[in-house]
Amino acid sequence: MIKPKRLIRGGCVAAVSLSWGGPGAVPHRYAAGKRQFEEEFRVAVTETEHALRDLDWLARNPRARADDLMAAFADPRVDGIISTIGGDDSIRLLPYLDTNVIRSNPKVFMGYSDTTVTHCVCRAAGLVSFYGPSFMAGFGENGGMFPYMVDSVRRTLFDCEPIGALAPNDSGWTVEHTDWADPSTQPVARKLNPCTGWVFHQREGVVEGALFGGCVEVLDWLRGTPVFPAADSLHGSILFLETSEEAASPELLARFIRSLAAMGCLQPLAGILLGRPGGQIDPAQFPAYADTLCRTVREEYGMRDLPIVSNIDCGHTDPMMVLPLGVRLRIDSNRRKLSIPESAVV
Image (cartoon, rainbow, N blue to C red; front, side, top):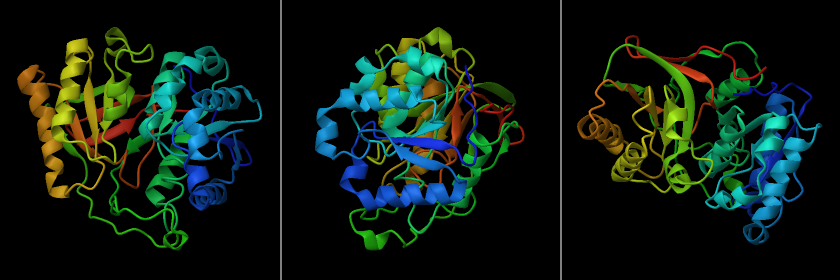
């Protein structure tokens, strides 16, 4: 996998709208994310040609969204690309994306949720990409960005040293819904829930493998497309899964795992990371997701030695850390620790 050049102070990042036209629908929320990102990281943000178009126009023009992404990769003035927000239809861009353009112009690409589609395209192109915050969700956080997320972005995207030990967030997490359409909510910090840390399941020992994954619902849509990885390319990989704000059930997670097994994509894995469930779900129900995943892997497929770590701080709860897809991650179940023993950028 090709590692992109690191982001630097004074550099330029392109904001791209690959799915929902959030910046056009709620411009002040996008502006807050852009401002907070620029002030913290001292990187200039420029919008691609159609990034700020209204949501109805963007919905009708997937080719224009794809052209924006290709133009951002090809533009030598752009050091990185970050999604403005997710959505549910960037899969419509697949016919218009050129992996040769991505491979020939490696640069930082980051987003989450529906941006899983583009992460799979980057993987098909051989480029490391970054599952992490977007401008409107993450960088646009109410009352300012979370330090946990800021630290992860800086260590992962701006530093060429090995990322090293990862740590669970211990300052509280949130999925509180605020009305983005109401500007008065922007300065008001969201209420936090207490953190419980990461939970290690199944086998003891240490495994290491390249990260692959994203949002479960989006990965499910991608099965059968040219950018979903072949089973033999997943040998020794660590699979990362997280569920969206639509509050997918544990049963949906189990069905997806069964689909992976039927495709031969489950058996080659070295481990699984499971993000904290997204959506308005009672935290008392969180263990059901990990229990269902472990039971499906263990009882239906006999994979009792597959290490699984749940409650990972990445996905549809905030704050989130950045996961570099295509980079090696180590699960040390003996010491209950995760680490990334290499850099994600050059």
